[in-house]
Length: 184
Image (cartoon, rainbow, N blue to C red; front, side, top):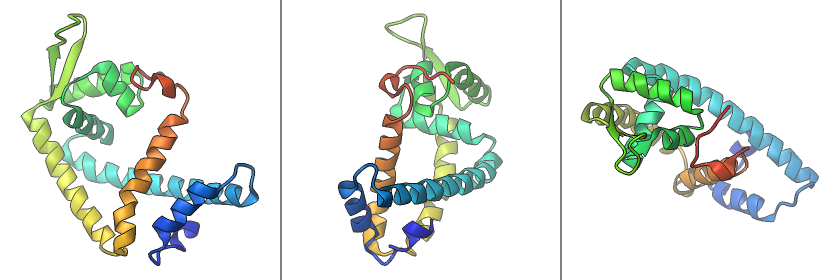
C-alpha cells in the first residue's frame, strides 16, 4: 500500500492512468509496481474481507450469501449456473448458498419458462430489505472513508477498482466460460 499511498496528493488517478497506459512487460519498474500493487491489493482484500465478515454476519447471512443476494438484486432473475459464475463458485457450492437463503426466506425459485429442468432464482422482498440495510451501512462507511480524499481521487476510485476487477476476471482460468458454471 505504501507505493499507492504516495500519490494521494490528488495525482493518484493521473499517476495510475499513466502507469497502466505506458508500462511495458519485462520492465524492472513494471515488475516492482506490479509487486507493490499485488501486496496492496492482497492486504486490502484481507482487511476488507474479514471486516465485512464481522459486519455482514451479524445480519443473519454470511458474506457469500450477501454477495449472492446482491447479485440477484442487480440481475433480477438468474439461473443457478449464472449465479455460480457471477460469484466465481462451483455449482454445488452456489446451490448450498441458495438453499440456505431460500430456507431463511431471502430467495425464491421459479421454473425457467424455456427450460422446465432449470430454475430461476430471485431475491424476495425480505432479501431486498436485508441487502438494502447491509449496503446502506457499508455505503455510509465508504462516504466517511472517501471524505478524507481529494475530489479527483474520489471520482476515480470506483473506476480504478472496476477496471482492476475486469482485468482480473479476464485473466482467470476459464474466463472465456464466464457465463457458464465455474468449477474449482
